[in-house]
Amino acid sequence: MSESPTDPGARAWSCDRFEIDAVAVCDMPRIAVFEHLRSAMDDGRQVALGFCNANMLLKALCSASYAAALKKLVLLNDGVGLDLCSLLFRGRSFRENLNGTDLVPALLGGETRERTLFLLGARPGVAEAAARNIALRYPQHRVVGTRHGYFAAGEVETVIAEINAVAPDILLVALGNPDQETFIAENAHRIDARILMGVGALIDYTAGIAVRAPAPVRLLRLEWLYRLMREPRRLGRRYTVELGLFLGLIVRLRIAALVRGRTIVAAGEATSPAP
Image (cartoon, rainbow, N blue to C red; front, side, top):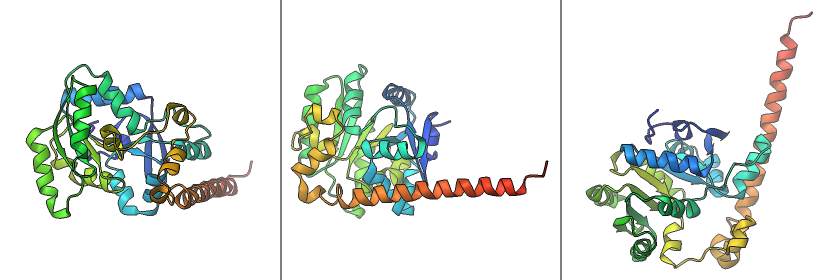
């Protein structure tokens, strides 16, 4: 099956899928993800990729239009919230945590063949700083274009023209969710790039203007707490109120699924012929 963004998201890849309501998330090891991406770049096919965390899933479960946009992307699991959700529904967590902040550097570091990148997002000047650091860390690759993320709806055509002028192998879109996934879903078919990824704060991290949690904190799956402590005003609602809403919503969905299951079984028993 072609791995184009017009395919129904995770169904475009042969992977174990975790599905909740209208959202499907691929459950696969990192090495398999790299194989898919490398193959798409080598063969000239397009893959639109998103990293689904608890906040993103909550927004999709509450917005039919956002959920519809995500169907056009291959979604990978990001964070402990998705693991909790998977445990509740499937009795097991995801194979690996595939957040874009770790996956993209690992992909670039493991690629010996030259790949070209376009960085779209963050405040003015930040993408350029990130490009300079990418040149230092991954000299085998080239950043062929940058554009800040503060553009109006009327400028989308100009942004797409800038990207298409250099036709990058990899387009990193850092507009925050839901904007970055919506941008990719709506425009991927008009963008001349092989891999399109919604990467959140990755450009900020790469530029050095944002600081990641220390490795031991990330190992304990507590990076969200570290971020909350550093930016309580910006992230306070996300990691308190919205986290509570997320947990409440997935519990209600799980209860509803169990009730539906019992109803189906009961109906089946009621219509079974007598021995």
